[in-house]
Image 1 (spheres, rainbow, N blue to C red):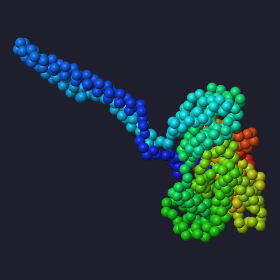
Image 2: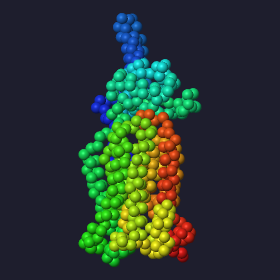
Image 3: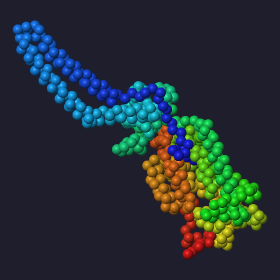
Image 4: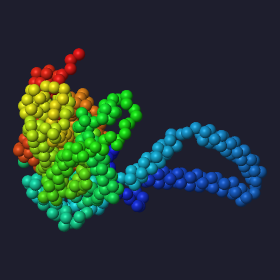
Length: 534
């Protein structure tokens, strides 16, 4: 389960404005420059007109007419020379870009950029509502506001910083109730840790702040028809990949040309697919098991979300030939109330899938040792059991040295279904991004801890320490589709409790044991498969 991101079917919760944005700073600056220009131009016109009036006044001085005409000729000649020089200087200035021209161009570009950001960005909080909320919602008995800062991914909200005047949970519940009375359903209120806090709260725990976002901005958008279509197509592909896994598990029974095509990298010409039809019926039980684990996983999420009034989107199953499926991407369709809900809903899916997978794996191992079920067994390479330290040791303890220390091992298809289900559940429980494990770690220990866990997980996947040959495709899948952490809860401060953290720690430890492969020395000593030495 995970949130849809850039490569997946992302639903960006943006609302576009119909009216143009108002940008005061740059426009006021341009208006001020225009006024200065007009004022200086007006003064120049007045000076010219006053000079011209002195010349016309010669008509009143008839005795000095000739002297005045001489002076006018000199003045006109000097004025014409000055005009010529001015025109030449103006032409030279126009040929070279001036600092004012570059600055004006930059300002225009800046204004256009702000216009585009305002148009494409989400709807912001109304400033008049901020004043009303600051006066009527907060106070000396709840939360004393000191200053305000932008809040949200695009600064579309307001973050109120100040001093808490009571127990944080009680204050938050009171503020939520009063906000509904003042503004109705227009805004959502978030209680988050104060950014860049200098110290903890005197009452204990971190200092808190309250963020406010528009409801249509903060809440996810409903699932569209195209998303339902895409989810259905992905489910059909997952059915196909699960059936293909069931056919591949019968590799010892398949025709040689089919085996060569799937195992030989130099094989180019595909075989006749009609040869696979007789093996489809025997592949269905394994396909049912793989699909059953994935459906059980998603049912666990929905059962945990329903009592908390948290809505989930339709799951987007990710097909995979090796495991049948990489799991599913499921989106939260409502804001999580608190971090406890985030941990519980995130862990419910992998725990449900792992419970069903463990049951199938255990029953399959028991049937593999039962002589009455010999006709239902399939032969798989013994090196398969070297892919997981935990599952390999359990298989070795159940089947014995004689069965495991060979080139091929006869097992029941339920063993393969359980193995694939446990491996998929372990991959989804890795503490990175918005995988189930990443969400659980973010809810239990905070976003800062998730960053550290995520870097360690990416390093182990990149080095091939976890997951063996599946480490690279899974790492790329997480980087492309599941890298973004989950958004904060409404109450993103209250701790989840000790037992939830302990359960998550045990789960991550079992995940590491499941994804760690059996190294050659240990496999040779325990007799898990035949280790080839060169």
